[in-house]
Length: 189
Image (cartoon, rainbow, N blue to C red; front, side):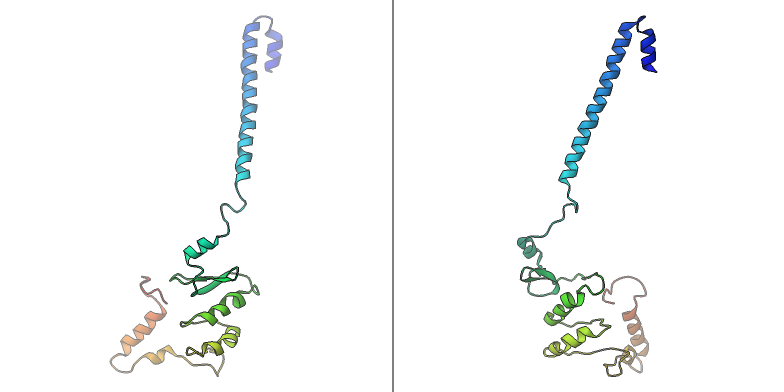
């Protein structure tokens, strides 16, 4: 439409249309230059970014500083010939699909090297069969399996003393199982 106006009225006011043409043309060229410059800038930013952000494998020095190469703790993995272990007060969670090696790679090695007490939820009994004999050399080992009549029995209600302590002992057993106030003061439930 602008070009039609320009064609019809250019003879009457050529300076106005020439000046307007220069303004419109330079605006268009400036827009193209800005678009190309921003595209180049964006391409450079994308090239610098990694697919996984800034994540990378830790160096041996970083592993030593974090305490993951210490000789004690829960086994998390392996770095070369060294085991990566966590020996802090924090919880450890391993999340992986079935048959991915959690038991063989983490649980069993930890049970064979862990010097302290361990309570293991072992539905199949594999961890018990592999580690109980070795752990019995330095610790008392008990199997609690409510579906197995040969297992060690445990009934927390038998911990309640008869007599004047009955009510308080029953409350203690209930408090161990549940935190009624939700205060999280007793985090070892």
